[in-house]
Length: 176
Image (cartoon, rainbow, N blue to C red; front, side, top):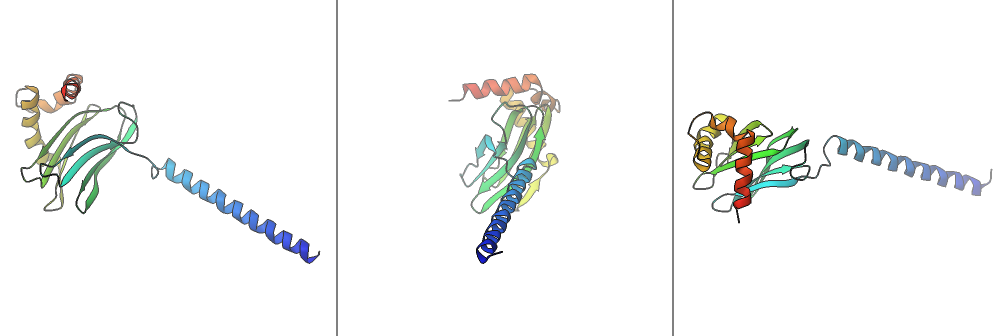
């Protein structure tokens, strides 16, 4: 074989190596997309703290009212960006209620993932997550007042019922 042929063989080998690298890159991208690393999330709901320093948002990987989705709850602010919750739901996100402390350092979030109640919160000053036991005692009376319901434990199942979700949707339509 001449030197010229030898050089062609090297060129063919390097092209084959480049093709192999490209194939591996495509497989890696496909793997991340299938496993959720490449999901694009759209805002479904957002609320800002009274002082404007922080916000909490429910993000979905599909546009609003699309069945079967992944969601995540994001906290944002000066020097803060973290995911508070993540999950997937078969239905849609229903009634959403947020409670901010007067100084904006604590946020409590309640929402319906289909008919399932979800409650969590965050204390920005102490940098700690709040569980449902710290969120529901504050948010439940707020939901009862807002929707004219009796203040009892039955407010939460009502909130995630068709009636509660319809009341929430009606309220959203009335907002300017």
